[in-house]
Image (cartoon, rainbow, N blue to C red; front, side):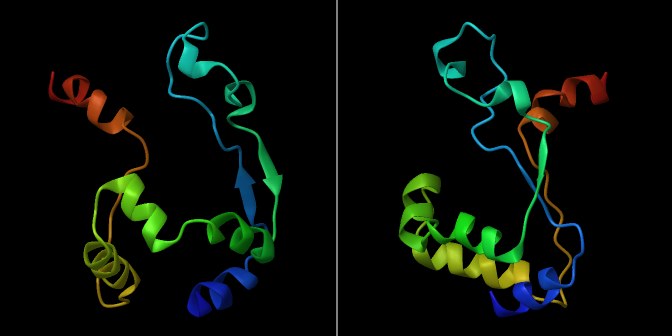
Length: 105
């Protein structure tokens, strides 16, 4: 977290998006109730301290339960992701997979 802190503290416009934006289902679907989908694109000014607070609840144990990966797998992934000699590419959201048929024709 130290390196991330050094990098992020110098970002003048750190922004935070909405959380709990739903699943992209129809508005009447039960999983879409009580979500922030109406303001999904809204951005809020943020700070490094707020970011630390936001991610602090995501312990290795919690993420392990959420993801199904064990602690060793998560730590290996974290080290790989943080390694400055490696290139990491990732996509956010399942839309990239669900729209692959469009790309492939």
